[in-house]
Image 1 (cartoon, rainbow, N blue to C red):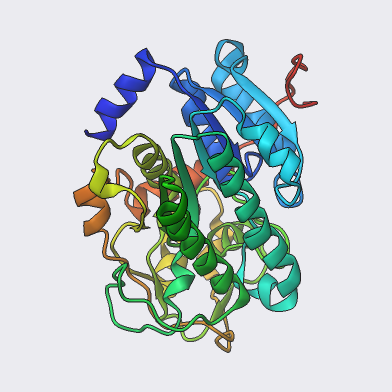
Image 2: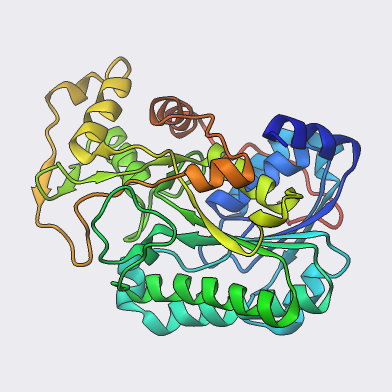
Length: 353
């Protein structure tokens, strides 16, 4: 079933979804898309990296008619009782909550493990106990480790290069074991360099695209690790939303209990990315005409290139990316350059917005 057919089916047959990490970048985009499809959503977040203003913006975007279908839970996936409460009576779980960032995991490995492994297991067990139809979880391209052959194919992974990569690999192993031991249905999505609206540009662990946009707008230096030839498979968040919904609703038995690359299937060099951003901002920010990046040494655990093979997701899930990097950057810049967080009224049973 195509994504358009899936959305049409959901509109006439609403389900109840749990989105963990709902106040984060990807979680809030999932929330907005699901609410627009008339779905009921239970959102769980401890706000350690998520932000309530993201939910402000979703509420303003979807309007009161859709917003009434959202139930907010502030809580931590490290608490089993919270996990059980969140998934009670739900149909699907989209598990996005995690402590992201390879550098963060190198600095704080025990925190990464507590959230990404213990928290994941708590959610997976709660889903199993409550008979959840499908458990879809965010994995990462970091599990490929030291594999340098391109494109990266799901069945060919190497040695993990960071605690974050270990945590995501453990998630995949737990999901596989649960399928074998408890007949659960799960799907892991290996995200490649996701970007888009609501991605936080602040802090030491910010991703490259929001960090560079913020630096350009503030007339601050833009740092490139290496000579700029390093390349990544940048994936706009709308493609990730599509993959989550397709994974949760697929009726293809062959598509279950496995992992998929979720990306564009293309490469963009960092110097190319810099030029694309500068070109798009130049008409309104002429100071960027003379801007040149500042080159720094490559970081530990950085691989020179990344590009996903997405044929498995195309074949088994019907995944078809709708946004190439150019369109994704246009939509992202429209968000980053506009005033944010409109004032919205409080709603009973909803976040204190």
